[in-house]
Amino acid sequence: MVHDVWVYSIVSVLIVSLMSLVGIFALSIEPKKLRKVLIYIISFSAGALFGDAFLHLLPETVEKVGFGANVGLYFLLGIVIFFVLEKGIHWQHCHGHLTDETGEHVHAFAYTNLVGDGLHNFLDGIIIAASYLISMPAGIATTVAVLLHEIPQEIGDFGVLLHGGFTKGKALLLNLGTALLAILGAIVVLLLGSVSGIEIVLVPIAAGGFVYIAGSDLIPELHKHSQKIGQGILQLIAFLLGIGVMWALLFI
Image (cartoon, one colour):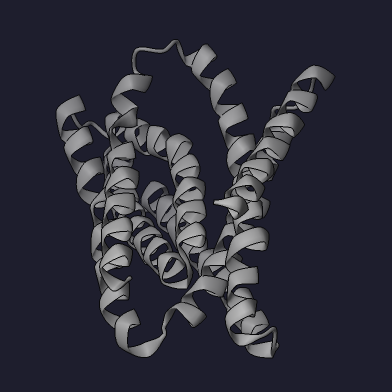
């Protein structure tokens, strides 16, 4: 069982890390068409993140330890952690623009973006491995949710690096390098989890983080692109499909 958890966790984070290469494929797509496709991927991703949090991560944790104030506090802590992380990245973004008078502020932000992306990927590895320590279905569901969320994020990160002055090759290499930090996060959790039961703390924190990402980042983005009723309906369908996939994974 322990061997299976290691194998599934490492393979899962490797697959998620390889999503950092998606940016190169996005270059061949017309920007207008890419935006249209991405908004539905974001809709699906938001539903998947909510579904994973409320159908897999929290129920699995409650089944193991019961639903007490501690689980609720860990969940809220996840929201706070991702709030602080996002605030820090935004502050560094603005700080770079305000203090750099040389015309190199975009380039500086590209490096800042790499730091933020590396930390985010490290947390992804932690979340995926902790979910596998809870159960195989929870780990698979979390991998799918993270994978879907990574598609628009990695395309955006690749665009930032190109805009910052990096060549395509170097942008891909740097993006992949930060993505591979997910493996380090997974290994840390797997080593600690075997002796401490750390997943009981990390999984509700991950659930809180997923709810924060879906509620504060993804859904507001959807509202910016739902001027037409038809688009809004398609976004809703994609959102519900994301939840539906997480529900279907309960039967694995």
